[in-house]
Image (cartoon, rainbow, N blue to C red):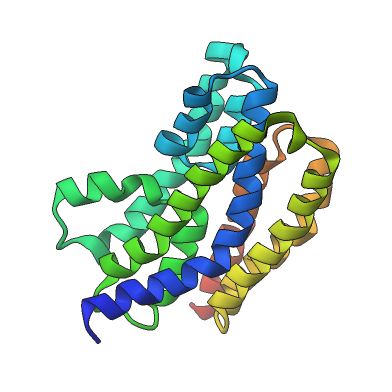
Length: 229
């Protein structure tokens, strides 16, 4: 299959994840407006950061300054792990191309790529671009629209829509990993733990839960490894 076809496959798969990004980034734009950030300040969080939980944290806690630095470092640690996992697939690409495209790495793009590369990895970078660029562009546009429409989008109704769309997105992500049950189970574990995280740490559960789930998966892998020995 030609490189163009891999790019088109990425474009097709981006539709699975892109819908939820519309609602999420409309909300980020509206939150930026509600918290008195400028249009460029709000848009730049998507343009240069592109990390949904970190952007919500930055937009909603903009004036807390240096207190946010440890949280930002902790949240960005996952991008090191995602990049290290993707690196073997992109080893033939130049540093310049990788640097320019690094902004489109996010959990949804990472998950979609890993799932696809297990089936076919002849032109992984083309698929990565096809998957990530539309999601990033849609997120930029949604951030801008969310800011310009302001308070009309910063409403309980939008929050209810996001609460409905997010589980659908992660269900789609989990389905992409089938029949790898270990990875599907990690999503299922997230569904189970999310209500408890929201109840006990509503401001930071998006930061804490991934580490908790990762710890559970490491323990599970270690138990499985000992059984095989």
